[in-house]
Length: 489
Image 1 (cartoon, one colour):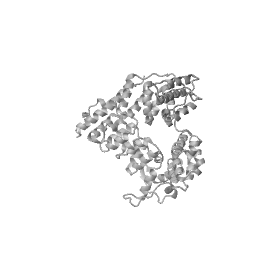
Image 2 (tube, one colour):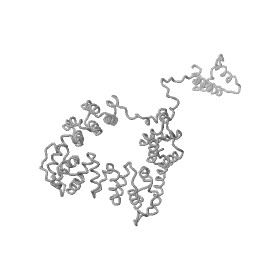
Image 3 (cartoon, helix red, strand yellow):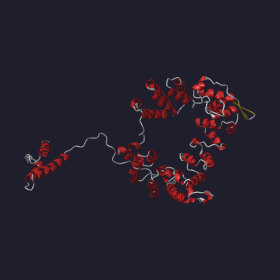
Image 4 (cartoon, one colour):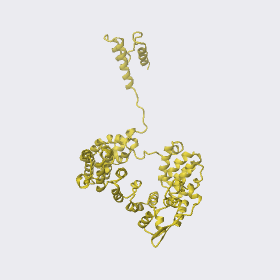
């Protein structure tokens, strides 16, 4: 518009050097601007500014909105589930006010399990919170209903909450993505179709450098299966040491692989039973070259109080399934554990049980051992784990608390009492913030117990424990309220 440009030029030069040119009053706009110009109360500056204001609004009124090919629905689909009660919402608000994402997640999970929905007014707050806390996303979307899905589509910041937002596997992602993106794509594909994922990796293998090969090979941990063996066996001859080590590592996890079969033959030759008693004979050293190539080491010169034969046999036992030993020895697992532990093989047995995810064997070992093994806490069944943890709560309290905190099952009352007893003796090592993310694991029943019954005559800082206990019980009381108001209908 020529008139708009004239206003800009006049403003740049200044009204003292150039007045705004006359504007023809031949239409409604011109007539309105003429009123401004002929008003004797307006000086040059007034005329310029008022004319600019009118003309700016005139231009804006004539702007056409950009067309949209697809318009999102302007309303959410009707809900088919009931909203949770005001009391339940109050317990959720309390969990958030306390700053506990663990209790917030616990609330969302119980809400979804009970078949309730979040009230609409709570959705924006929780959706904002979930964008910064990945653990809240999935449980939130299970109880946000149709309105939550609708809202997530309208705000780009909330798109990551939508189902299927995870990385989409396509040719561009796999071929040109960053290494982390490619690893995520391969892992996702591996979970969906292990054979297709293996084919994807094999097709691009020659194009990858050694570091990338090793990183991508790690993704085969997902859904590792016997069909991977032929290709992994080929990779044990790769030029890259990292690739070879990773290939051997994966093969050692497959009982059907040639290397594990070789391990089993060596173990079977060294460990046998007669009339229910296990006998161990020395290995014939040196072992075949491929055994050492696969990762079995010889005794280092610095090692004391152990023979090379025993050292290598322990490594072999740690790399064969425990179930193989039970079958070979024709003895039940508990007997195998007892006798092999007496022969110095307990740690090797536990490594094997972890390696091949044999939880029953882990339980047998934990029930009999006098050694603290923190690495098994996430694998043992809750009942076995708590009985095991009870035996070490006093001497290994810090490690017990740390490992128990990685679980997903509410702690039993007895182990919680032991943990509280340990904390009372070390009050300055723990604070309220430490338990914010463990609050969902604390049992509600602890609220109704008298600490005098399980503290006994221990010496502890009563004032410090009292202060911490009040904060802990505040978290537990919130959990109790959540469970009370979100019980199944």
